[in-house]
Image (cartoon, rainbow, N blue to C red):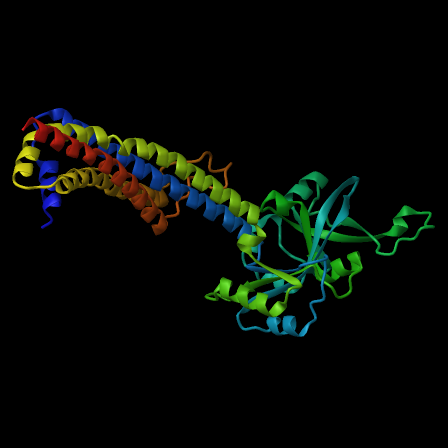
Length: 410
């Protein structure tokens, strides 16, 4: 058995001459335990919020989006895109044409994004979960229909059950007449009935989704599209598929995954998570460095043992390692206990919703969400391990100074 480790283990459980040493060691271990548990719980909560928010966005955000590198539109009728549409890995291949337009309902007006989509868009079985009112239908017995975002619906006071009033959409013509007397002659005006209201996030809720052929007539675009949105079959690797499309589509296109489509959202979520991690780590460091006081008193308590070990030929390096292992065992045992407590709390929160967020009828989720990731446990363990090693190493140097003092007295 490793001699320094064996002696350190005996010191950890042996009776000390001063109870204060046991008290300080216990406080150090409890501090590390609480800090480790708090860190893993907070990281798991942020993971839960990230999962909830991204699931909200992913209901309407495709796995892959292809947009032109320059300009607003491109021709999708190329050999490669036609082959991609028939690819067995592709679940849905949606052509999208979108542009801002003026919307009018009764006497109210607002500017919103009109998004025309092909029928493959409706293959997304999560669309119904975004519906706040009505149904997600783009074509019915009476013709084309639209689904409007909740922000626009609220501002325009659109009534989805009114069969007589339709939403008017105004889009400027590509070739405007200079000598036109009536300003309305310079706009394409189309009406459409609103079948439902969706709610995802403000960025999306200021738009309206319509059939692609309706958008083509409104925007005067016969063949070009603004984007191609692709969702893949279950089990298909998104990163590999994206890399393949990038290599085949050419430099004229940008191929984005969900993280790249919502870059600002992912950046905010990651920034907040790491900011909290850094703050809690500083608190954990304070708890870890309490070990210095504990080991300093232990060195003083074991002066006679150090003298005996020195007389038996033990070098400074061996004695330093004894107190290094002592400090590591105190802090790492606290870390492991903290991780276990944090895991148990997270599991209870997942299954029993112990900590509520507010009234169930007024919030999207009633309790704080939890998502456990094994990488977080490794991160916390290594964080505690690194600072525990630094604190214990600093304390073990005191034992060497004590050896020098003993040798001088001898």
